[in-house]
Image (tube, rainbow, N blue to C red; front, side):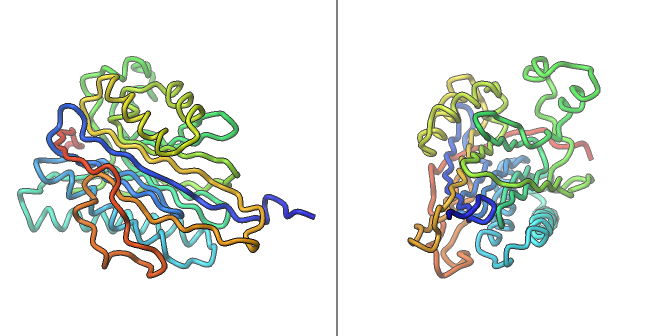
Amino acid sequence: MPNSVASQTLFLYSTTVSDVGTVRSNNQDSAFAGEHLIAICDGMGGHAGGDTASTIAIRSLAHIEHDDVNGDVSTVARMMETSVMAAHDAIVGKAKRERKLAGMGTTVTAVALVAGYWVLAHIGDSRAYLLRDGRLTRMTQDHSYVQHLIDTGRISPAEARNHPQRNVVMRVLGDFDIDPHPDIAIRAAHPTDRWMLCSDGLCGVLEDSTIEQTLTAYSDQEECAQQLVSMALKAGSTDNVTAVIADATLALDADAFDLPHQTPLVAGMAIPAWTPSQTPSTSLSPPRPCCATRTHRQRNAPPR
């Protein structure tokens, strides 16, 4: 008699694509795509500040890919929050030591798979979407000024796309006097779940309906990610554009064969900062770069 879905093991396979875009000179996005963790960080602040902040955040989260937590969902949720807060402290400390980095910050949106559950950590205006049974759901709330205006009924979502203050974020990690605690959510995972994490360079120009159609139409992860990034650029995005695609796969008999391990991918500005010594597990190769880019972005951070 076959095992029930609840008793079987889900595996995560993911990829990421990042592009500097048509306007910026360097890439301040950073991304991570592993078999237990996916993440997107969108940096902001000065010539070197944004890429530094997003890289710090990815490096702070990456250990979750390999840490042995014995399938304890609550432990992973605490680790996600602690890692995000550690990134915040590291960003603030570096900004204080190097004044040229003053005002730097980053968004963080990360999802971990543990014991059949998704654990989501989020702060900022990057987004996480979940495609389940052909239906797309946005799993994060933008911590932005225009989202506040939408929530209070002052503007419509359509008006937000062209609002002059659409780049103002209200909550991020970094050198700002704001609450850096991330939103944490836990949700049961299903076989065939597909996640898409992205920076606002993508979701800021593509409608959710377009994202849903693309995630449904392209089964190949890399092809899907490339298509989404390309569509965002063609739609006129002036920002860095990064997408992470991840699929949950059910092993019908995990004991009958050895499933291949995925080497974690890094994208954007996290690539040059990564070294083999940072690989947390000897069973996996060092993270390999994917679609390296360049960028310099001006984002409006919260007022001090």
